[in-house]
Length: 222
Image (tube, rainbow, N blue to C red):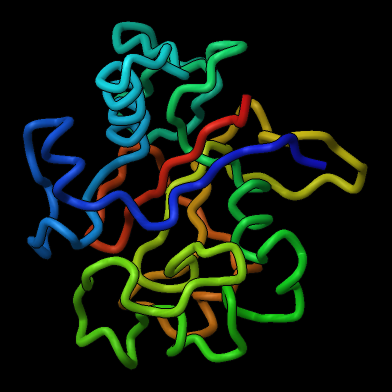
């Protein structure tokens, strides 16, 4: 069961990233293309900077000097301590549960293997139609909630540490508190169809960067 939340129609694009952060790490350049080669840490920092620009209280407390004791990944060189600020509705990463709920159109599109369609080519970019690169956001069909390219285009960072799903009813789940890797969802321009379904889960350590990984913004509805 999820509380009300908002989710970006599109992946965060390079124009917005560069305006807020003053740089563009992307391999495939283009202001309306999604930003990629951003780590999980880059994304939470961006969320806070965007909140400040919009004069909204930031959602995250970020301590770069203190290592997160819950981060068990030996490959993560940063290990920033990042905590949500209770009561804030600043910009943030979606939880994995929010991401899947939105990708499935709140359950209306539950029978679809991809977000908004039985056919991946209609709603997303993947290895057979992407020409091995990203594209301007929003060119494919949206799902029933008007969300674009949640299957294919770029893998999307979520807040959660990756772990097995529990077998109990939960409200606003956020995954395990201590793990090695953060969740990625959605599939990418270089993936096969089988890796772009709304049910597919993957993960990587938080300071990993790739031209197959981006993100979209979320906010708690107040």
